[in-house]
Length: 307
Ligand code: CP
Image (cartoon, rainbow, N blue to C red; front, top):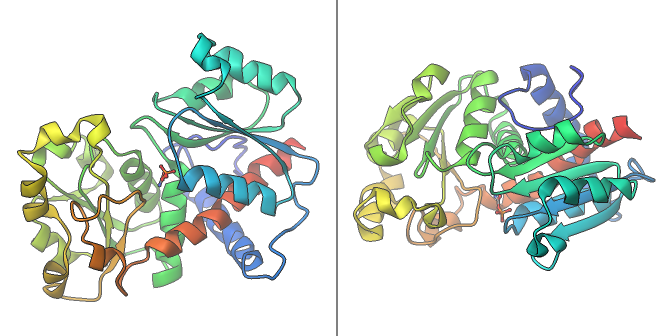
């Protein structure tokens, strides 16, 4: 963002220096979240509009909280119940909202490239809150923040992303961000859920989960995206769980301390057993807490420039 980035569209186009700037800025906002009054005046007078065209719990609430903690004015839009149901286009929706003098746009959309499209159309900074199967940059950043908080630095850390890689914008943002900061990144899952272009990013592939567990410091476990037809890529949920599901017995065979992450929502008992998700090696709720601080940092670094 110091490099003239007014938008946050993805970690693929972000420099390592800009990623570190977000992570360092988030650390000071993380401290604000521990105060009795969790609010600073940083974005007073700035209006942020959250355009959510796809379902969300964590990202939508996390952005809203981050905006309110920064004292911004917040407008939240859900496609259901809006004029999108009458056939209004994304372009018209966004331009009409901007005409009401909003300053920053946060967008989640099921179509890859929707935030990039808006960034060419609007004067306001655009922040990608997840676009199709492309990227989920604030999730990637909050994952990196959480790993850095736990391990001190990302350089040399062994991170294995497990599961439905091919449909995952979280996997892509993690791969782009982590490799830029010197982590060793691997993926593990059924062959049918692993895209074949990952070699070019220096990503290692495991097909055996026990081998991956033996290698990794971090397992970032992904949801099997049944709504994106991931289920057609393996024989049954039962079989997926048997070969790639993370359970306590598998983790007992780990050669070194291992932490578990998951972006949520979790399919409990499919990709991750409940006792692991809720166990003492799980950083899942730390990820959620850190997400607010990371989004405050992103809003500050983009929104501060617009006002
Ligand atoms: N991690 C994540 O994007 O969760 P939501 O879909 O609930 O926002």
